[in-house]
Length: 192
Figure (cartoon, rainbow, N blue to C red):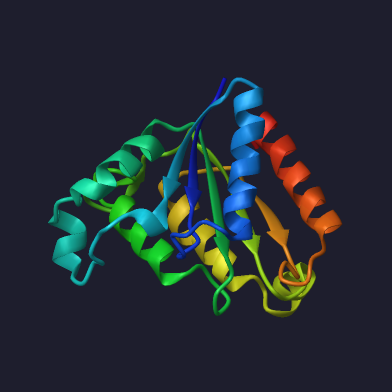
């Protein structure tokens, strides 16, 4: 049994979007396989954004984010779901990671290079987008996705990191959406 933290990063708190459905399907698959999944709905959390280096290094974590940080700290596996906005994750999700993945939690800062604290965690990143996924990956170089992988997740020790890119979601018919949801349910059961 794996402990999974599901970070649903769509900025719309209404929850009527495809990102929420994908996260739900993954959670359903995980539960059916006996995994423990804890949900984090980033858009429903109230927190201020970091504005200074001092706040990043020494500021207190907002109380509203403590349960999310605890869930991520206890998890064996992270699922991160978000829509592609301007080639990367929405700003609120980036602000969430900046608040959560701070010195003393994801990394130990001292002399020299920071020590990674999440060496035993794995992750899957799920990105929805209006363009074809192949175009994002090959033409645009998936720079936003690579930034999350390299600069936040791998930097803190999370590895391996897998990806699922769902392109053309606005134009997708019911059959394609059902196929995507079934895929997510299977991935949730495997905690991958």
